[in-house]
Structures are given as structure tokens and as C-alpha cells.
Length: 253
Image (cartoon, rainbow, N blue to C red; front, side, top):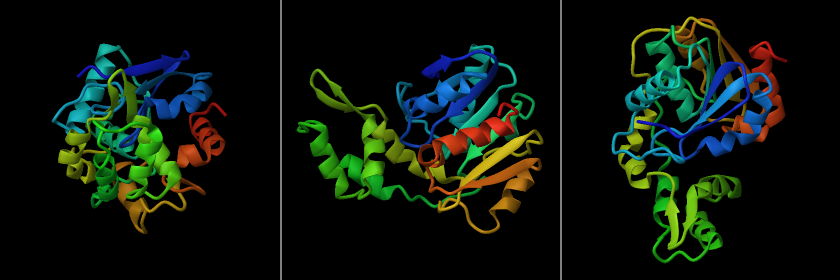
């Protein structure tokens, strides 16, 4: 699958993978910062942003997408950074292809199984009838009945695109809904990644539990685990602190 991407900067390649319901757009600000030191590739994963839609939606498919992306663009030994679902893709890629990346950065996700917890979001998005929708404000009101947090709604509604005939979803909403259980699964490949690795967790995030550091170190024995006082959206809640931590890890601070 040919993934949509944006590139900026020069130097060592840095690939950034967004999370579920996200897109490359979420990383514009950080790309500007990182592009002073790296050639940055912001990638839309399948069923998100401007990349193609597919009924196949799991981490093996997204790992293969990333392998094809590197081959197509002749990218060698990149740094790979992923948040949440993007972090799971990055981890799968790293344990399957430990010789095809230089460093790994994983933001607020652990290599383990997660119970599905996006039911309210999916119900809320599906409650918006695009055939009768007249405005973004109306979409926000409908979504608020399922998703009370304004910042989460704002993030989700970035996937709503206005067309000549009304509105459409950029994400493959039916495909994601059908395959959502695939996004909670554990790492799909055997192996370990022994290269330099940074795990950044949100201190107030519910994605980390006691004992998770031991789980991380089993697969990523060189992992450095750092914490920032945020929830799950580490890079959005404390962007400067997050960028500084990443650049320091990469030897660019």
C-alpha cells in the first residue's frame, strides 16, 4: 500500500507514526522542530488521513506498509517514533526488522494486550449522520453525547472533511470499527530489538500499569523509560518538554 506522507528537513531520516484516529497533521509542529536536525517523514497509516482505505487493518498489515514505505523511498536505518497505535506499529517493525532502524521512540504505549476501550468514541462518530449534517458545530454537539472531553472531540473531528456535497470522513470508520479488536493485541512477531530505545510515558496516563517496565525490557533490553506529567497525549500536552526529551535522546539537544 502506498502511504501518504509529508517530508521536511535534511539529514538522518526520522519517521513519525500517529495514533488511532490521528494523522500526519497532528505532528506538524513537532516536524518543524525535528526538521532542523533530521529529514522528517510524517506518515498517514492505512485507513487514516490521506492514505488508502482497506478492510485489512491490523499490525501485521501496518508493519508491512512500513517495510514497503522504507523500500520505496530508499530509507536506510531511520529513527522511528510512534505514539499509541503508531508506537505499536513501530515496536512490531523493530522486533521483526531489528537491523532496519537505528533508534526507536515509543510514546505512551506498552508491548502488551490492551482491552478495547474505544467503544464510546466509535459510537459517537457513527452517531453523526453525514447525509444530514449541516455544520461542524452540529457534529460536535452530537459527538458530545458520547465523548464529553472537548479536546478529544476537537482531535476526532479533524477527521471530518467538508466536500462539495457536504461532509465525509477521512478515516475508514467502518473498517476501523470492524477491526478495532486488532488494535489491542500484543506484539505480533517473535524477537527483540537491542538498539537504543526510548519509551516516554504520560505520568497520568492509564496506558501504563505497575510491572510494565519489566514487560518493556524483555523485548527492548536497552530501553530508557522516561515520564512526563501528562495524560495519554504526551506530545500535545507538553510539546516543548517532549521535543526536548526526544532531541536529548537522539543527541541533538
